[in-house]
Length: 173
Image (cartoon, rainbow, N blue to C red; front, side):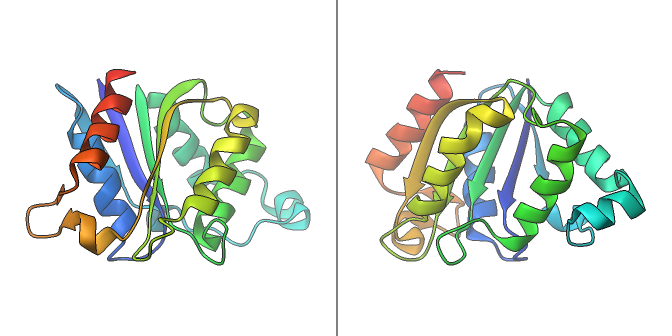
């Protein structure tokens, strides 16, 4: 099983990337590819730029990565209650190739933050819009207070209730 995991964040030290990687590695017999969205940086999307540039090769490459995966694990960072600008831009360009950009793949949606909110606002937005973009969401899990619930040294969640939620999500694949 091919699992594509990534953080919807451009941070080099993304806690969401750590969470996505952890969750993906819990899937037995999976070949995990941890993607960095910084590798897909493009000009800010606008209709004018789209007319000028067409569909950028990086957007096409990202779309193909999604299509090649059997499962997608995304962990959303939250900036001011919404998507990060880097993810939103990549999402906007890719959705112009095909609005059904998740291609009916099973998706586990995660989100975390250092605070108690666990980026739940952006997670709710992502989950709410997922059907319009052909994401078969198997679970949406918010991890609050990341540094209290994740062992950075061992790369693992430490809270049993949260590890159980991840295990339950994986069992639905």
